Length: 79
Image (tube, rainbow, N blue to C red; front, side, top):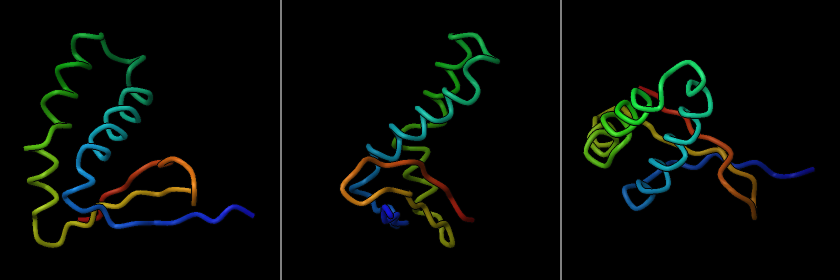
């Protein structure tokens, strides 16, 4: 059986968190939005200032779900 890990994200992981967040949002909602609207939303909501600020909010917990020796599978945020 493959081991799955949940890991708390730190500031050094922010670029990877932004990338996976943008990718999963676009895959989920891209078909329902124009490319222009999607690009605008991603640029406004999945950037270092926005996610970094949310990450610094007391009580927020950002994490990734990954397989050991493999790529990140997804992410989630607890507030």
